[in-house]
Amino acid sequence: MWLAIKSAITVVVSLLLTIFPNSELLKGMDILQFTTEKEECLLNATIVSDIHIDVDWAIGEWVWSMGLKDVNRSVDTVDALIVSGDLTNYGDGPSMQSFFDIIGEANPAENLVVAMGNHDVGHVEDTTQEGARQRFVDIFNATNPTYDIDKAYYKADINGYRFVVLCDGGEDTWDHPDMAEEQYQFLDDALAEAADRGLPMFVVCHVPVEGVNGQDKIWENGGLGDCSDRVQSILEKYENVFFISGHVHTGINGPLVENAFGFSCVETINGVNYINLPTYTIVNRYGVPWGGMGFQMEVYEDEVLFRARNFFTAKWYPVYDHSVPLV
Image (cartoon, rainbow, N blue to C red; front, side, top):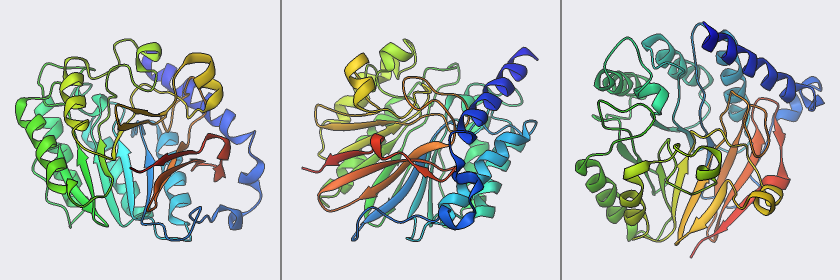
């Protein structure tokens, strides 16, 4: 009961912080439309994380729906909606179904790339962890007729760009993923297969690698743990790899946080580009605190641009934009 009350309080605070500083919400729907920053965008994607849908908590479903409606009003085609885990609060079937139903109703993007998070795998009470993964696969496939995945980790190609989705594969894990040898090999093979295209490749995993994007300062045990070194060694074999994560509830940030605390939500380490996303619904730390936040990711010939946006209030935050040059 206390957990439910605490969650409700944090979300109400988040919404108040979101709405009142941004009067755009009251100015009419015409201001909600947006375009890419530049012409000749090769891949236009919305990336968010930690939605935490709970069917007993209708306000979260509404905030998710409002954000997707904002995406759907993009003047330019949105090629993909990318969600890096914690789709639900407790991994239950009705909440998982609601997460995908809301996407289907809004129809915000041409493709969907979704990873499971610890709340979708390890926090479930109505099934086993393997059952939770299978339920995700079944609902994902039913919602996306063009997909036919057989595991919660999978690959997809969008506009020629390779996306690889990772997932916890253990049965006794809670907040710390366990990836078997099969999944490491899958990651390596999927990247090697697309590397000769000369295009950026994107790996989506709910949990960040150890020590990146301030993980060790924000949440000491909030990284990939024993899996981290192996995953990083694979990522570092290839050029222009982007690792997209969430989990630690860090706000979108920029030079101020980097100067004060020594980390950023977008970092390049040993040639790999790490992007850690804020929670979409609950209050964040070390950056923009309120919900509704994410990035519009725009891929150009020479850079990948991450444009900070509050999709709930339709507000850009250009001071927190990040440009990553391609090699």
